[in-house]
Length: 141
Image (cartoon, rainbow, N blue to C red; front, side, top):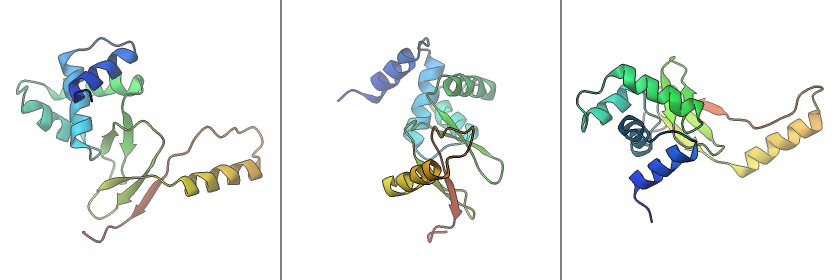
């Protein structure tokens, strides 16, 4: 199995981007934090090894990674932007008490929604995909 750094480097290259230390560090932070981190979370993580990195650099790299479909934005109800490194289709369970976001996969739900939109046949609309944010509270809050 390849090391995470090799996998990250290959992902960046696969999108035609130059592999830079900043891109490597930010994408590694998104993957290793694995909790839909904020830009502040990413900055704190990256600064452990690169203490002089600026917040502007983090945002610039995140924008590039988003544009090249290596990271997705996740907007929370409180307006804080979070980031997700899982590009495969999945949904989110969002805790309105503590802002925790958990990934949620459910093939049965996906099929139900796909079938629903096929049946509805909305004129002039073609379903490409759907991403749900399901709001609630976790017992641990």
